[in-house]
Image (cartoon, rainbow, N blue to C red; front, side, top):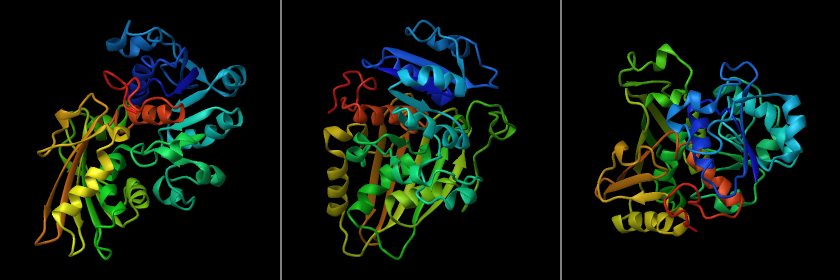
Length: 347
């Protein structure tokens, strides 16, 4: 197969290149950046020396992406991964789709169902409502049948991924109290802000702090996909990579610990969902850093009807790049762990 990664110079783009270079289906990969990128014409391994000589693609120069490039090479592509800003993805996704190229978009351009939500949460008008209707939300553990048939996959954000993996087994089983809010407290490392230098995400400036409370763009995404009202409290922490979401759910009065256990067993004790590991104790970010896995643990107080679930992921992998590859594997009818795990044979 022939693919392209647009935004290959960023942290997520680099992780995509490293994973896809190991994928047995990939024979040609174009590494693309925007026309005004300083990384244009620079060798990929020069930007990321840790990946030097690791694949046949690592020494390629990053190419400038524009309409001329698409006209010349688009007809040869089978799929494109867009690790690009939201408005950029919105602008170009339709152009790829018109050439029958499968699109895996890692921005937020197609995650929300309602066009009216984009000005409020993303600061721009959405001009492709038909694509919003056809886009499939790429939470691989729950939407695998729809993803397998999709032309446009909206890969979830990192916070929503951890939050939904903790929440959806419960809401799918309708264990939550209907008149309560689900409370999500998330903590992420600084790589979630991207590679571009910023005082707000500078490691020397960051201290553990809450931000964008009651207005974060991932709040409607989490609520939309779990089917219940969510209050989302994000925090930035002084570490490089990784993310934790701790979710508090008020359950119906008749819910027992056995009901909760059944919900999580039914969700995750299948080969399809082998990237999610239910652990015997509270998970740590170090347990999943630099891996495609999500680890989670739950505890339920039957007297108070309160369930707490904690989920940890690597924000650049399960929260972005490796999840996109899971979706790619589903679309291409490959084992879910292909290029992601040592044996790669999860089915």
